[in-house]
Amino acid sequence: MKKFVTTIKNIFSIEELRNRILATLGFLIIFRLGSFVVLPGIDPVILEATKGESSGILGILDNLLGGAFSNGAIFGLGIMPYISASIVIQLMTVAVPSFQKMQKEGESGRKKLTQITRILTILVTLAQSVGYLKVTIPSEAIVIDNTLFTISSMILLTSGTMFCMWLGEKITDKGIGNGISMLIMIGIISSLPAAAINEFIFTNGISRALFSVVELIVLFFVVLVTVALVQATRRISVQYAKQVVGGKVYGGQRQFIPLKVNASGVMPIIFAQALMILPTLIGGIWADSSDFWNKVTVAFADPYGATYNIVFAIMIILFTFFYTAITVNPSNMADDLKRSGGFVPGVKPGKPTSDFIGGVLDRITLPGSVFLAIIAILPTFAVQAGVGQAFALFYGGTSLLIMVGVILDTLQQIESYLLMRHYEGMMKSGKMRGRSQGVAVA
Picture 1 (cartoon, rainbow, N blue to C red):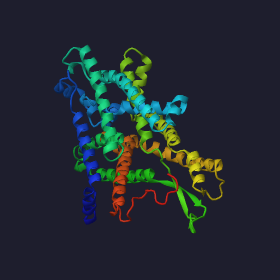
Picture 2: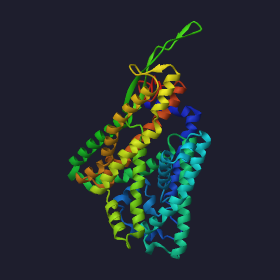
Picture 3: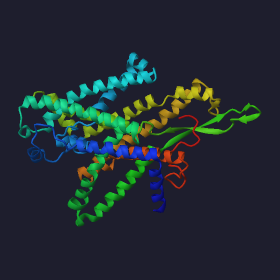
Picture 4: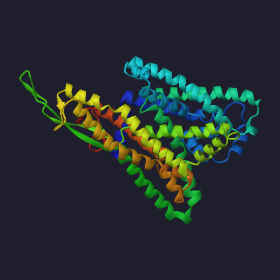
């Protein structure tokens, strides 16, 4: 306990770190407040009386957005349209030559892609807002002209999403951690207390005390496995040739390249979840007039059904390979090693090294993506075992993976500030497990 208090004091004694933490908290408070500001033209009392309990895929979305989805709030769509737009742009950087060229232009190209992503976000939000209003807002809760309400709400929902995107960017620039992931995490955490109280007090009670203990034990081990998956790395040994400069010998030491088993982090889960929401929102517009869209809506509205989970798992595996491919470049690693005089023992420099690293990456990404998919669909098995739907979301899936990934990333950033200022790290060893030590190439 004494070490914990000392660590907290050290954290807030660093002015830059203190300011970043306070800025992050301020932006998150603004985000949460926006989740309760109801769209103009809606009677909150009628909406609360008619909306009932969120369930299915809409319940999962409501959990990710911290209740803003079911509240009919100006942040009702949150950051999800931006994620959908980012998926499209990243796919285009792989398939379209002009986007590939922009990606290679450095900072100027990145700014162009960011601007295109923002414009696409507006278009996606306008399209999704139509389905959102039809699926989520009951007609009896609308107290103004329906056409006026639809137009004004589309504008406000789009503005709310753009503001959420701005908040995410500000958290990344001025705060701690990845802003977009942080916004999703705070929405998830906001629903945890109510879910836990309902599960262990109102649902289980004293009569099911043993079942509650089993639930907590299983949840503990699921969290351990998730942390192990997020932190697991495969090290490739690298040897540096000795060089004599000015009478001194440099190099000759052995280092390593750390390749994460889950190099893509939580992004495949976020991407897949964002796309899994689209069939329900789009189907809600044409479900009444199209038998096909009605079947699609029914199939994807049940997150505990076989169709949903099979498609969800496949998308996670595909997105894991895709995101790993665009974030980890074996050719660049091989070139950097060659320029710095490093080599993998037993492998020739250049293309053979690139092929070797790529082969290792493929071999560890496959089991990593499969385990990621299994963890993502664990809530379905938890529900089948008798766990309440609200609390089952924390047994895996998007909720647990995002929370673990974001919390670990944030703690590592805080620890890096402590170590740079010569303070002891957050662990007794002075480093968090999984941090890069003696890394040859990142």
